[in-house]
Image (cartoon, rainbow, N blue to C red):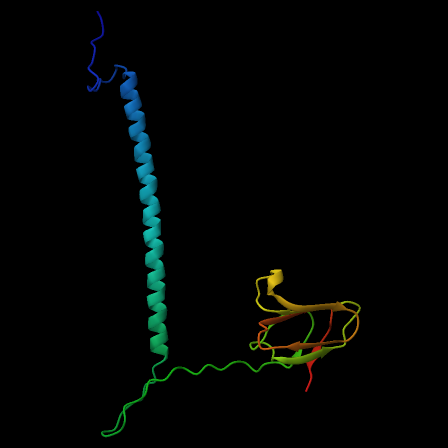
Length: 171
């Protein structure tokens, strides 16, 4: 007995092999679904990241607004309404000397001004425009033996020193 022939568009019943065209259609259909699933997953991740960023920004704005309000217990009739003020930020006392090796932020850790060091066998220092670590971020540098004097100006962001010992601000 011979096997029945199926038209191109008919699905064979289990036990009968697929035609070559039907197998190709089935493989491409599975591959298309894989691409759609991957694209959907990427889209979902992007939506979640955007939602998270918007949420954090809104939360930070609410926290900043809440912190900036001064609350008074009562307002007497005829008295002026309380004024909204920003919180006062206190910076730590800035040092007028630099101990040992490292990098210090100007205006946050040390003061601007002229500093002197007794130096050492090798004394390397840099005045930095930024903290990128790139050569363009270095405003000036020195690498010599003996005493050093460095003036830290208004455009300096940081000061770095290695092997120079203590730097003391000149009056």
